[in-house]
Image 1 (tube, rainbow, N blue to C red):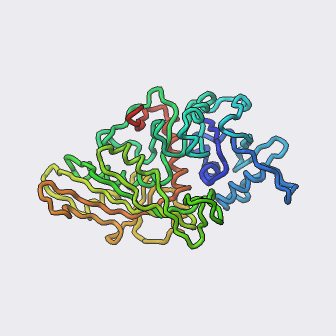
Image 2: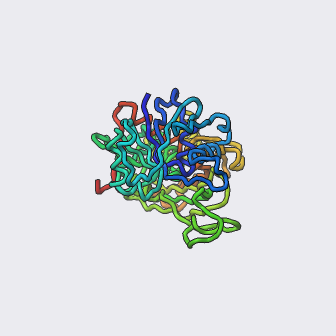
Image 3: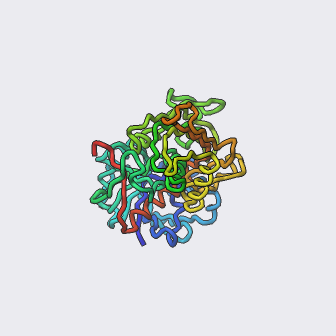
Length: 386
């Protein structure tokens, strides 16, 4: 059984990752937690800082209310029969020798500032074979779980064998959802017998559920620090980092990223502009493209799901697919040569989908670790400077 150190249990990703981990199925368990010190509560003096860890896990998944207990004497949390020691300290300077053991991997689920800092994320390679950061980063290679197994030549910048690399990012929550939609399009190249498929432009609009880092009351103009009540807050996403990494010759943008006071999942509108040539010279249509997406979703349900019933977001709050694509003529739109360019035709695909920035993302994280632990040849996307 592999052992994983979780660094950061203050937000939804870390606490949900613990609850979703099923060691017998995943092949690894959370061996320890390192998180920022938590002050004792002056009002509830009978409670200890470790009680806050229980609260975070249960609030992330209320179904775990009776599955989590605490061992106060030893500073451990027991979840579904797995006992996990909890250490309090800052990831930037905590004495790693205090763990007294080595881990097969470390998951850094603290801040994108930490993941972008090679000195901070790199120090955990002293005590673990792999280090995975839950964010985009231009400083380290990207290991994108929802793109696993696609042929290298389909990308504008091909992935490379990881070789001796052992520190990776797995992208942002919105990137991983976008990857699920992208996978459906890229995998259709083979299913529709396309001789070529060239991505020319990609756009994404995002409705992002608010995260626990937000606060009531306005502290600054930054979206997470503005009052969320009756207030659509314009923000931006890390998705273009991934777009430009995968397809550097495409023109890419995130045009809308609104933070709203709702529970996950959020919503994405994806637009792809591409050209293609078919082996028999014919043109494709929306129906055949949707069939190709359905086949990929049937084969890889963790990566994407095609849903014919347009339920509201609450219907998918427990769904762990990277993206839930609405399978309807109203929401899945394909236009072949809309600009009337003839032989130089540019086609447009518009896809609307739900993206779960917590459960869907944690499923991708779990799959990324399983890929690293598989012992097989693994591939990652390297930035041009690497």
